[in-house]
Amino acid sequence: MIEKILPAWVASAETFHDPPEAVLFPEEEAYIARAVDKRRREFTSARHCARRALAELGLPPAPIVPGERGAPAWPTGVVGAMTHCDGYRAAAVSLTAAGVGIDAEPNAPLPEGVLDAIALDRERVPLAGPVHWDRLLFSAKESVYKVWFPRARRWLGFEEAEITLDPGGTFTARILVPGPFAELNGRWLCESGLVVTAITLPPG
Image 1: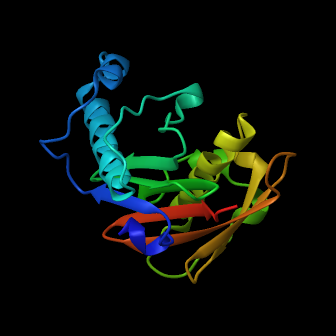
Image 2: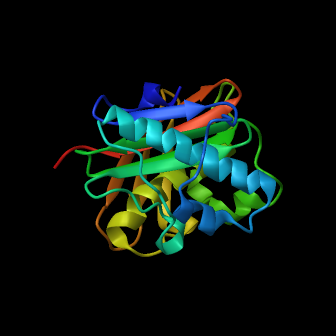
């Protein structure tokens, strides 16, 4: 599913369950040792997807330990992102892209109060159709952050990116603070009870 909104120069893998063959490297195991079962399964399956995606690039399996602010520490030369939600885990990686951000969310309304915390007034423009636009807005901002942080190395608040959603399956993010980007363009898809978003910065 996620591959439908990614360019050919980004490798991806996804799963709708937790594969029994998914295992962790010792470094990853040490990081997640005290986590509850749900967190452990998400963490393990997302990394299983990441290693499958890395294999598509011809790279060997490698540990992917969270670094600063939880951002994955990818092998040298790799950019990528991982995501997980109930019933879905995915990863996308590239050797040539300048940045990759992906996110997946259940296609359901945001919990009460969350929209007020993440949305600017001018972003509250509902979309027609089966997608829950508030959840799509949240997902788009998550993808923006996953592209922003590896380059900017600083936090980006929800209020610091203004998202314009297009019903045709694209979105634009205008960054409202100084940094490496002024604007980012992404794609979105609503399918199988999920909303997925992706931003990929082209080579160079």
